[in-house]
Length: 388
Image (tube, rainbow, N blue to C red; front, top):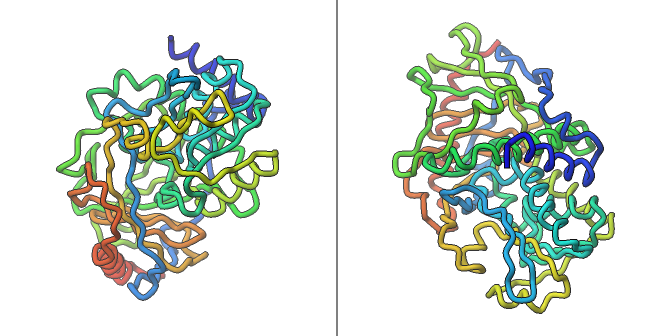
């Protein structure tokens, strides 16, 4: 199917499921008002005694990209919607819209959704808004799902596919990205600030390259950022006198941030308020789905699909974050060589980045020493920042 036709059809589905005209707004860039000036950045209180928790997730990476397709299994129709790598929150609404198109094609009026993470919740909400009766089945609910351990930034092409499969995925990825972006614009300004714009700063001791920050033992991932340049402001290179950081090369970026605790609470509240039902249940084998009352199901189990559906194409990519005590005055993000910082309202997230040994690593044991080292490195940076 041609990209324009595909985008138009998916947009129509999402518009019906949420707000009229949503897809038409998807290509309209929004110019956010910067929340902080580089000359007056509040210092982050980075010390290991302020770490409130260390968390590990396994990003569900598939070389070919997300699996969004319909399968007949026994007496059920299963629409798969999983394998989004590090882009689950970012692509959830657009991905859900494509999955919902397939569900609607079956004529179903009742839907079972397997999984209650970012993908499962948004798909369930879209189905509700399209008039379906929806029940979620999940072994865990927020905040005890892996989606809650994400960093919380708009990263729609993070580990989304490998470079070899990028050309085949590009049009579908753009569809999901634009639909999701449009939906996030409608969530700005809500109570609890589930979604907001932030400024951030990338720091380097060498000039920035196009693929700054690659991990040596991971594959070359697909890069689609050029296809959606119109959605967010472009990064700006800052001269030494225009920022407070000790590094010689600094780039300011502006991006969307998800305050995941409040955002997940919003999604759960909306689903339940609309009459949605949730059953806490763990499935050890896909054959167990045959006993569910719904004829049509959406499989949104993420990395869990590897075991549940014997899908060895799902590769775990381990990621670890630490959460510091919140500082409302800190409104900017950071990205350095070994760590990144996301100033979420539920805690300042310090993510270990650039480390090896995470690809195809299902270990979810937190390595606190790695997060403590990242926090100490952040503390050293903060100590060198210029003050007014």
